[in-house]
Image (cartoon, rainbow, N blue to C red; front, top):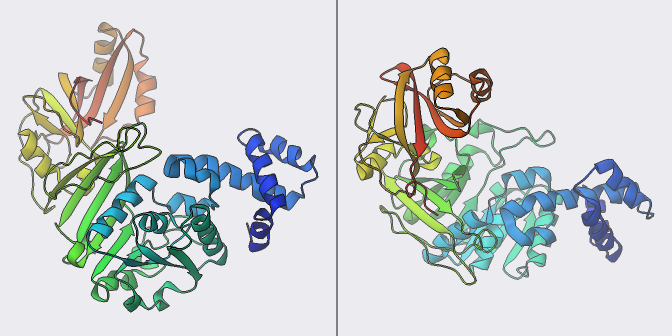
Length: 429
C-alpha cells in the first residue's frame, strides 16, 4: 500500500470499502476481489482494502479486538509486539518513573500505544513514510493521538535528551523482500547505535530477536526472554537502572479474558509472580525466573519424571536455576531435559511421567507401541536428528491409546523415552 491508497482508505468512501472487504475476506481472494469490483470499487482500492481486512483478521491474535480498527502492513505485523507483552513492558517503564519515551523505529506503533495507555508521552520515529502514517492513524483510532505522535525520519538523528527513556525495536527484515535479517550488524538502526543508547539515556530498552547470541549482550544489561502460552515470542535488553538481574525468563499465560484485555502484573525479581485477576475475568498470569545465566545443572540418571523447560527458560540459560527448584538433574549435559523423582507444579515447563526408556530402535519402538495399542503420539525432541512426522508415518500406529515420545540423548546415546503427561503439574494457567 502506498500513501495515496492509504489516503483513499481514510475517506468515507474508503471506510465503506473496508467494511465491505471485511465481509468478503477470508475466503477465495479472487472471489472477494470480484465481489468488490462488482460494486464499482476501483481495482487498486479493492486490493488495498482486502489486504487490510486480511491483515486485521490475522492481527487479532496479537492485538485482540483493537485489530479491527488498525492499519497494518505484512512486515509490520510480523515484527509487532503482542499486546500482552507490550503492556507489561510499558507498565515496567511507568513503574520505573518514565514519563516521556522515544520509540526509535516505532513501526506500526504496538509498543508506543502500550506506553501511551500506561500514561507515558511517546515520541515515535519511523523511517518509512507509509508505516509512519499508519502508526499515526493507529494512535488516532485508539484515542491516544495526544500521547503518541509520530515523525517520519532517521531514528539515529532524534535528540534523545528530550526524553526520560528510549525504546528501540530495530528492523530485522529487509526492505522490499521482507526476508529476516539474522546478523544484528545489518539491523536498522545499526547494532552499534542501538547498543550505544544505554550510554546516552539511562532508561533504555531494546527489543531483539529471541535467537540473539548471548555474546552480543552488552555488559551490565539485563537480557529477558518472553514466552506466551509456550511460544517464545521475543527478547529484550534492559539498560541502566532498568537492569535488575543478568537474565530473566518471563512466561505469560493469558486467561480467556486477558487474551483480549491484557492486564499488567509485574513480578518480583528472582521468584515466580502471579498476577491478579483483571476486571471482567482472569488476567494474564506472569511467571518470572531469574539468574546469572552461566550456572551449569548437575548431571544424573534418567528418573521417573521428565520436565521439558519452557523455551524462555532455555534461551535465557536458566535451566540450572529451574533444576534447583525441582531437585532435578540433566541426563545429558548438552540436552535441556530435566529429570526428577517427584512431580511438582511449575509454570516453567511440562512434566511427563516416564514409563519406558530404551535405546532408539524403530523396530523395537514400533513393536512396543503396537503391543500397548498406542494409536496417537505426541513427539518431543531435543538432540535428535529424526523428523517427527516421518517417524510418525514409520511407526504405522494403530490403537486407541495415546502416548508421549521423547527423542533425545542420554549420556550421548540416542534414546527414546515413552511417557504420559502428569495431571496437575506443568505450565499451570
